[in-house]
Image 1 (tube, rainbow, N blue to C red):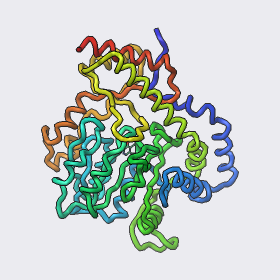
Image 2: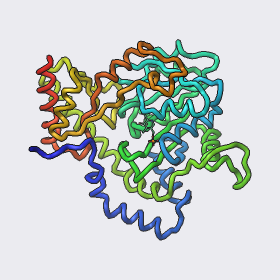
Image 3: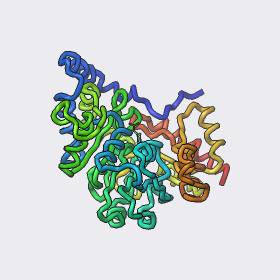
Image 4: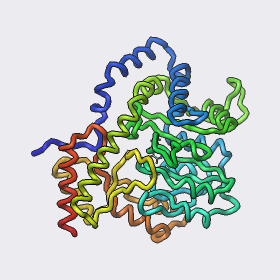
Length: 371
Ligand SMILES: *Cc1c(COP(=O)(O)O)cnc(C)c1O
């Protein structure tokens, strides 16, 4: 039996950084400073430079990045926020948690992202923001979205796409606000939960910073109600060690995706659709196929101990918790079809060519059998 191939091997990623990560831990331990402080502001400056944005604000998670961004835009009861039904739950959950209404618009079948052309028809006088997701590491069509949005603020959910770019600009700095996650399985992960809000708007940046500390400024004087949305100093210190390696990890993911692409091209598969990169630069947080007889391929991968996952098995407009919105099967057919067909296979940077080949062989054999 061949060795298992996981979806992600976080220990392999950290091994070359082991000493530097221990130094960062030691430095934080010795400083005795665990909330805010120089590690957080140092990381914020470094990641702002990497992203080419004026402001980067460390927060407690990607989910909290979304919540605090929508709070900064004063979104609440009676407001509508247009978003995609094909994403991790937090995207729509945050809208609902603030008492606003998620309005779902179907996706583009190639990028799996919000179909910007269809957004216009969903805009009403109550639309207070548009929340596109840059899913799997690839940007949404931000050019069309900007044209359609006019003055309506755009909050980018870039949780899976730190370092991805569109028209030469890194995502998170294209809309009004950008939201990132450092959950361990993202391209830049921390050692627990963490997130980031980005913006080029000075007033919004100030508001996010104040909201992050219970809305207080100065301390113990509260003009607005915020929350505890802080990024830990220890997470910031560890992220500062990992950030300089991020570009090499992106390159590794892109190299692996290209290898899969060329194997599937050579095999001439017509019934497996690859995640065609439509916009530069895809950073492949996930490599997602559409396959026939998905359950059968999953069983085969499982038998061979090869990691695989379905992102996502159920569209957001069909989730039980959103039944009150009246969503029905057929509302977003492209999303619903994707939910039935998608399968993510391992693409993390440390995979060997032999491992990638083994995964590709299995996919090809399966697709030929179902051709
Ligand atoms: C991971 C993720 C989030 C949430 O980030 P957390 O840090 O886990 O809270 C939000 N949106 C998308 C698209 C994500 O992938």
